Length: 366
Image 1 (cartoon, rainbow, N blue to C red):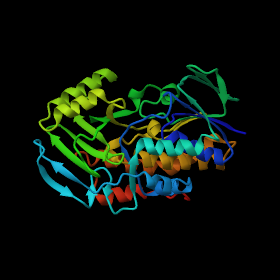
Image 2: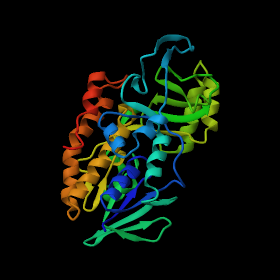
Image 3: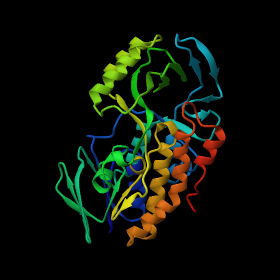
Image 4: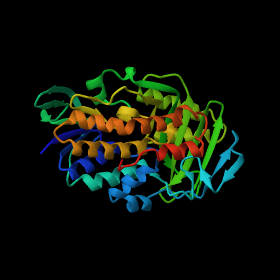
C-alpha cells in the first residue's frame, strides 16, 4: 500500500486524506498545533467545491452549521448606518445563492471527524527535514521518530514548512498585496442578531458578524501596510493600537483583540510558483497557490485541489511524476482565475460575473 504524509491539519490536508484513503493509500497527517485549530474567519463553499463537499457526504452537515445572516449594514466612521442590504453580504455574497458560508473551524471539524478513524494524525509535531531517494522520502520530525513515505504533500498554508524544505525560502514565492488581516472572536457586546456590520476609516476597516446563535462576534479587521516582521506579539500590539484609534467601538474592539484566545493576524499575500511538485513532494492549497482571503476562494481552491490531486494520484499510483503533472495541468487555469479575484478587484468585492466564472471554471470529472 502506498504511503503518503500530509503536512497540515487544516482544510486542504484532511480533505486530501479523505480522498487518498478512499483510493487505497495509507495516509498520515502531521499538524503543528496540539489539536484542531479554533477560530478563523467565515469561509465560503462555492461552485465546484460544493460538488466536492457533497461527494464527501458533508453537504448537509455543513449546511446545518452554516452562518445564517439576514443582511448587513455599512457604517460611517462614527457608527452611523449609511446603507444596508437584506439581499447580500460582503462576506458571503447573495443570501439566496446555493453557495454557503460557515466558520472555518466548523468545516475543519467536519472533515477531521470524517477521516479520523481511517487516517493517522500526529498533532503537536512538524517536519524538520526531507531526504528523498529512489525508495521514498525520509522524513525527520521535531518529536516523532523518522519515517519513510512514498510521497509527501505540503498542505501547510501560506508559510509552508514543506515548501521551504523542498523548494526554497518563502521570499521566492510570496507576493505581498499591501495589507494585513486580523481575525478574532469576542462576546456579542454589540447585540447583533444574524447580522453583520462593516466600517472603514482611512486605510483601516473591519467587518463584524454574529455567530454561535448570536452569542459571539467574529471580527475581521484589515489595514494597509508594507510587509511587517512575523512577530505574533508585535502584530497583536499593532492591531490593538489601530483598533483603539477608531471612533466607533474602538476601545471595546481593542480590548477584545487583546483578550482573544484565538487571535490571528497575517499578511494578505499570494503564493505564485512555476511548479507545485519536486520529485516525490507536492504542494496543495495555500502552500502552493494561496489566493489570499481577499479572493474569497481559498477554501474552494483547497477542497477542489485535494480532490483533483487524489484522483490524479489514483490514476497513476506508480508514477507520481505523471500524477503531479496531471494535477497541475487541471488546476493551473482554475488557480489563476481565482487568484485574479484578489489582484484585479482590490478595494472591493469582485464583480458577480467574475466570481461566477472563477468558481465554475473546472469540472471534477474533466
